[in-house]
Length: 562
Image (cartoon, rainbow, N blue to C red; front, side, top):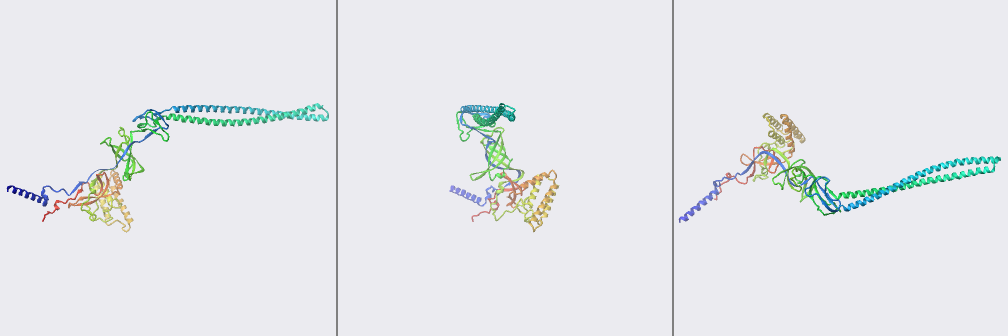
């Protein structure tokens, strides 16, 4: 009975404890976890990067091949050999080519001798032509002499004929004069015939000279042909010595001693020579969604598997326009220049890259979880109430007026002015007087637009009035700053103009009642973990990054089973 009574008491105590835990959970001694997890809004550096991978290669890789077919008789370079420009790295068997060269040189010597014979023939024809010309001149002189003698003989015969008619001369004298006249006529005809023969001989010699000169031209062409053949064989002979065209390092050798090289259709690759391994390039594949952020000159950090834990640096050299499609993804090749002074990076290594596309220093930032978090009870029909934080739209602001909840980045709105003022206050060391004057200028602009911008009936007039008012405010702020501060003002304006079309985001903060309140912010660069807040939040607040799925202990009602 005593044991049974003790067991009953233990059971009653256990039941009472279970009921207490069930109906009064706070009695457990451990408090419920906080309903929301928050993170501090701070300032720091944002480095936006694009990740990619690529292959390390030399800037210039020269393929050394052979233009001839033949057996390799010498290999004078090996892997990693340093070679100079023009250095012989291999030799092919040249016996057959040397024999062809000797035969070609003999043919060339024969044709040159034939050319000399033709030149001698031309010289002989020229000499014969000169001799014939002299004979022609002599014949012309003979003709002139015979013409003179014939004239004299004709006068004598005429005179003897006149004297015979008068009976003053004998018949024999008359006959002698007639015979001399006839003889001179025959001599003149003979001289003229000889002159014609001499002229014909000169013409013939001229034809012979032209033929000899034509033969000389033909022989000269054959000599040039033989010389070209000799030069071609000499080139082939030189090509039996495989030379490096550049100074560099042999990174690949595809030939062995005694192997037969066949260069029938294409030149076989014997060596791969890297021009300079102190300067390398990485061919990285960038996805089309990221290629718009890649610009020439951007800094690149990368690692290789050969050196775990070590970081190397490079610079974007070129973004090639040609694209490739790999597994339905469009990629673009980006060339990255890398210095390799210690020759640690080797051709073919895989580099894991991070291209630095943007760097922001001393900016307001929040964890990315804050931009993703939404209250569990929030529905599209129940938008979160905006919190009244610096840079956020003012509650009750009139649509279209400064401070209205309009998309950030539109000209004419007050959001850009507030962003400028906030950046000036945080990034410049403003005096109290300067801050007071800037606040007064901003208040004057708000008063100007309190009843709506001028030209309510004309949208173009309203836009022009807003633009003019903003320009006046910009000029007024510039006059408030010192000459040393104005360059920073230009920097801030430029940065805001670049992010003017930035995206808007939504974060939640805890209100005074402990409930989440939404804040619309302008977001900038992101490094994957944190995101820049251009406007909408101060750097001393807290944002919700998680939680919210549990019900606060204070809101729980005791659950009685009856």
